[in-house]
Amino acid sequence: MTGFRQLESRLLSALRERIRSGELTERGTARLTGLSQPHIHNVLKGKRSLSMDAADTILMAVHLDTVDLFRSSELVEGLGRRSFS
Image (tube, rainbow, N blue to C red; front, side):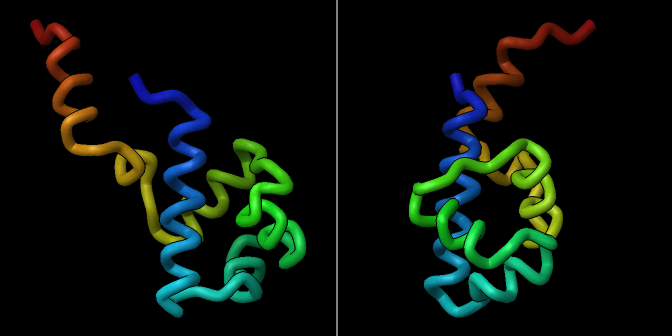
């Protein structure tokens, strides 16, 4: 089962990867989200955590959906636990 902390970790990993690849910068991410660049930097370094509102803002700014943070196998497993009538 995937929890909020794991999803936050995956969001930050995706953001770090986009910054590493040059697709985004910390400064650009700050501009897109309205969060300060020092806050973005500290979150990426693990010195600060994200509020749920900040995480939602980042998701929207980098065009991700919460579904993008799940592995395919987790989605299939989750759907398998649901009963459809």
